[in-house]
Structures are given as structure tokens and as C-alpha cells.
Length: 402
Image (cartoon, rainbow, N blue to C red):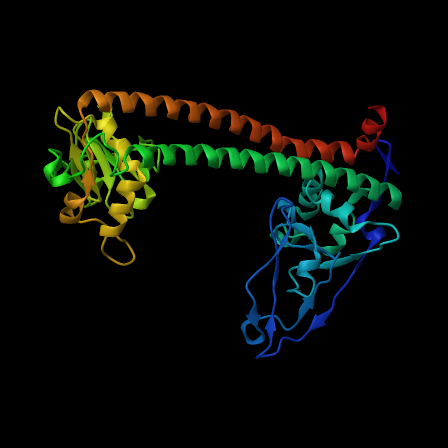
């Protein structure tokens, strides 16, 4: 049989079901194998003592074995066992097959497990099985796969791996560029808000003129009385944006929903300040409510809210905050500790200049991230495209024509 010019074969024609059973013994440690979804591959789970399993036997896997998750094969939970995972154990939920290495190169099948058409084939063979959409081993063996001669398989695999390595390198460079962009912002904030910077003498928040607003209001109860509520989760960490405030009824308000905020207030989470859940309250959230887990600052005329927010993101502020938190699982700043932290309040004109500079830098970084996201989408689409050509027999032909 041929498909797109390439010979095909049933998995059962080129593999053999294999079991290497061992009776689990108390006092003996067994490495466990698992299989991730969507062709990501096999991995080592937590090891167990033989007394911890309910299975009468466990089966040992070896390098090159094809391992199948009965339940999730329909979602691409099929893999080829790597050298590092040889010697791990799986239960009867993970049937295993040894490839006939005179006909099937294990790496060829490894790349097959990463294709959408293979996942679909597994899904079709799982339908209605035992009422739980499990795939039975005999059904798995019925699936047909492209199978050119062994030498051609290896040649195509080598080309796939070379192209995949180039894609991985490009993705690594993209990640490095993203990290460098983040580091640029952090380094700039560290330089500007260094306590030795002569732009202003450090002064405690208590003496800065900042108002730590503790205004509270119990939300009015009633079936039609709504308000916006800003919880910690509504703030996008590290960006200064409130992305998802909740619109809730007063009668459904949690007990912590009582701190009032106004437009231009700067709010910072006092819990785990290193997460940088800090934001500037926009006009549309004026006179709404935030969690009592936030400290709310109202700026006097000589302090720009945007300048204050940038300063809160600086390493100088974060380091002081983390040195002042108390508590165990949820380290937080109390009012006394918060007011003792030093800030820098230069002349208003200098604040405007620095805000304009930092806004421009942020805009450049945002544009860079947008380009990186587009590049990542393109890179992510390359591997499926490469595999599509490979298993249609077009990859080497494409090279021959170049």
C-alpha cells in the first residue's frame, strides 16, 4: 500500500508486544515511567516502593520501546523510550511494543508520535472502547504508518533532527532576547533609583508626603448593586496593569473586598512584594474597591503617580520590602515596615523627564516582545510543517531540488 508516494505498514507488522514483568517487592524502589500528551514524550515519574502499588506486576521498559498510555493515547500520549528512561517500570495501563529494528527505526516512530494525523488515528482506534475511550493494544497495532526502507527512514530522521536543532536554536535565541529586554528594564530602574543617585536624597515613605490611604467601605448589599473589585489576581505582575477586575454584587463580596481606591492611586500588594503586583488605578475604576491585601497610595502634587509606580518596581524598593516582610507562608509588609522604606522624590520636572524616558523604553521593549511573539508562532509552526513534508516523502525531494 502507498500513501503520498511512500509505503505504509501496520504498526503490528513492524513491532512486537513485549512484557518484562516483575512482582513488586516491599523494600525495593521502582522508577516509574509516564507519557505526556501531544507527543511531548515519556518522562520519569516519582519512584515508589514496591509496597505502594496496587498492581500485581510491573513491566520494565528498555530503550527504543514504544510505550502507549491506554487512556490518553487519543490525545497523543504515545512515546519512544529514551536511553535515560531505560529500566523504568510501567503498569498494565502502559502496553509496550518492541520495534523490529530491521524494519523500523525507533527515531522514525518518535517523530511520528508528534504528528496530528497519528493522534487522530489513535483517537479513531479508541472510540467506544470499554466505554472509556481506551485504546486496546490490538487496535493500536492496526494503525498504519508511513514506512520507507530503513536507510531512507534514517536519512529523513537525520534531516528532521538537523532542522529541529536549528528551530530549537532560534527559539533559544528568542528567549535570550526576551530575557535581555527584561534585564534592560530592571538594570535601568536599578540605576535610576540607586540610593546614591544624586537626583534626590532618600527619605522614608512616612516623611515623603505620600498618603497611605486606609479608606474602607463595606459594599452595599442588594441584588442589583454592583461594583468592581480588584483582587491580587487582577493585577498583571510586573507590568503595572490591572487586567481583570471582577464585577460583583455587593451581597457576594468577600470579606477582604473593602479598601477604596480612586483614579491615580498607586496600589501595591503587601503580600509577597517580590511578585510585583503593583498598579496605577485607571479612571474607570475610580471609587471602586480593592483587596485589603493592597496598600493604597495617594500622591500629593509634587509626586507623579507614574514615577512612584516605576520606583516601586525598582530593585532598590523590592530589596527593602523583602528585608522588611514578616510572616511565614505569606510574608507581608505591615504599615510600620512599609512607611520605613526609603524612596526618592526629585523635583517634579525631573520626575516628568524620567517617566518620559522610562515610558519610551517600555514602548521599545513592548514592540520587541510583540515581534518575538510573532517569531515564536512562526517557529512553533515549523516542526509540524517539517514533519508533514517528511511523512509525505517530500522532505528529501525538496532538498534534491534545491
